[in-house]
Length: 358
Ligand SMILES: *Cc1c(COP(=O)(O)O)cnc(C)c1O
Image (tube, rainbow, N blue to C red; front, side, top):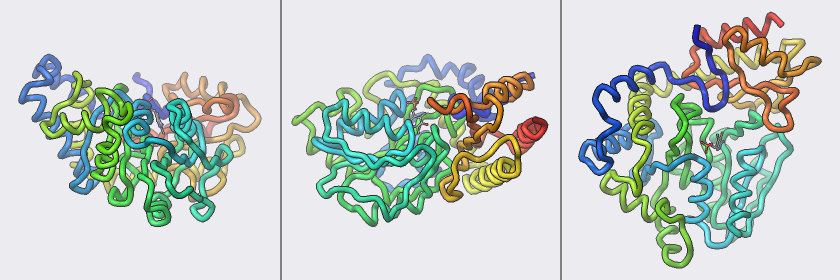
């Protein structure tokens, strides 16, 4: 029997992926030229679906890149000349900061201890900051930032461009895109697709800033905002894109829209509540994140008490239940359970039953 992947990326594939993959093969979609009308039609359809799913304001553009990691770098190259400020509360948010340092920017950060979130009142961003970055869901620690707090950042700091890493929170996180400037994701997390595609949502304010830097510094080569935008206007891409992933994404987004993003959010909340309730009552497991408002519904991190986490992971694996290990230094004592839309309520119940038996 096939295993169920509760891993935080690559993750369990969305249930409709196999069917769409076969249809794409049957229709020979992956041999069509990326300069053809057929590809433009596919990009247009992807754009319409993502726009509806995220309720994007009309001025947003949607670009495709290799990954979210690439977008960390490209956003810094196209949107900053000198400085950036990063809200860091785990390994992924820290990497965004590291990219800024690597590019020679004057990067500053507010760093929280691993497993803790931000208190909006404590966040201070220096005036003159060009780019403010936040990771909506820290896949490493299982800490999320409530969307209201992200919207609050814009109210408090209207000057910097606000960039949101929503890789492991999308499409669950109900962000108001009129209160941020750019956001991005990779498809192998909440969308349940094979890895290898980054999706970058970029508003007009970002494009104006990018245009002001164009010609004055290196802004990202073929994946600068200027070159992505130029191609996007014809639903084209600067280089041959991952047509396979764009095709699957388009269809999965349409499936999610047909189901209703509201239903997906309710199901995610319901599954998350059951997992956290179990962790709280369990003698062997405990929720890692203490502050309830900062507990991620989409990536749930549990401490494993009095037992190596590896034992739990291998035991579950023998039953076809694949959970993630703790991130980095927490590998030995934590497990991570992804609660993405691809995981059904029944599958989550099966996992909880197996955890209860320990
Ligand atoms: C996985 C992840 C990334 C990086 O995604 P890649 O596809 O590996 O580039 C970035 N940010 C967060 C929060 C992630 O979970």
